[in-house]
View 1 (cartoon, rainbow, N blue to C red):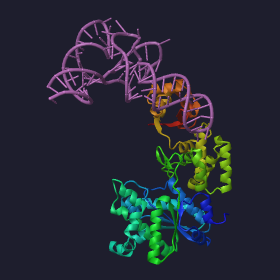
View 2 (view 1 turned 60 degrees about the vertical axis):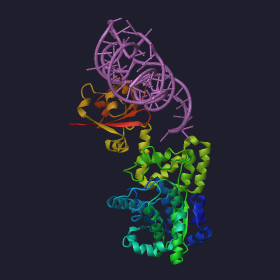
View 3 (view 1 turned 90 degrees about the horizontal axis):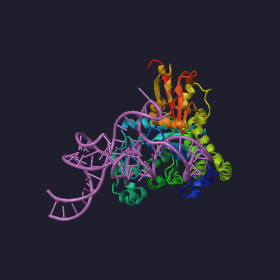
Length: 428
RNA sequence: GGGGAGUUUCCCGAGCGGUCAAAGGGGUCAGACUGUAAAUCUGAUGGCACUGCCUUCGCAGGUUCGAAUCCUGCACUCCCCA
């Protein structure tokens, strides 16, 4: 156990900025404190970028405190301008509600396993009944314009061509009010968030002091960025989501496995609960034997288990073995279909296998692994074609029922990584 | 309105009567190497029933045994002079 929570966070590189460290440390020495982080329901799933805040809350819980996850049902209708270069598009009420439900379920699952009480609140619950005049009088009156204009999130947007709307400008008042509300209702004194949230957090601290003479605190954690400057969790095909329906456990696992050496160390420290001494050992090993990619493996394992559970991790690892050439004769259709769920598939009539059989070139082309049958032919001739992970070098090869064994599908592959599934169903 | 240059295969760009499915580069795909990295190297790169056949070089006609290459018309792009 680390000497105290705040030092643990600092040691793991999770503290970017904070209010008075001594006061924070003191406040955190008493167990059962409540600490909050906000999540805006902009999509129906969290993504990898949210993991830092989630892990921060898990550490808070592990240290004996009670995390509060605030879902921005109200603020989500407005859109946070922080870290944004353009005005957000507003979500419809139905979408917003669906997002709130989905995100709440994810947050609960990720936080409740620590074993501490978890509070999930929605700021729409206290914002809904508040009238505009009332809000201006009770909240707006206490926030100096000079302070609002001084925030980076506002300044940077005002300097741009697009500017920002009054609506987005007002966002920080809502978030400030949230903090005060949680201080009232949950005796919450600390807000944590990404480094882009500093302005919004300090706005809340300021408001708490003016309205309630409260001594509120804030901690921001560094936003995860990769060494090459791009955002963590972004791939060519989009964000890496926590929802398995959006990003399969396999692709989630692979994202971490493929992480650059340079980024792996700090991700392990910031995003997992691996003890720091073990992190350091892995860093040393990384220097000695980068090819082993022990850090990436551990990282992928820890995070996949956390997000997708033990079963999800096993599925991802099984899929990994298959995708990297392992034989899979022993796997049944259902398992295979699951492993290859992400992979494009093409349906053929079962009868195509009868008689002479289906030319492999045709199957490759139809499944999208080759642009034309000529291209498929070349791939085969150059040794790049695989049927059920066995290389086929005969360009005249025809697929027959023998290749199916007792299954209804076969797995085609072109090169190292491009897979496609061919399904053979009777009747169609 | 007058004069000039151009339009080539995914992109750039050579070719200027047969040996042209068309140089070279880029991209892409495959192979080797490798750490599921980066770099590098090799091969392939219009289609197909592939030692052959079919369809391409702005569009439509024509000359010729034979045209991406010559002629005529049309369309579009760019430059110079009004």
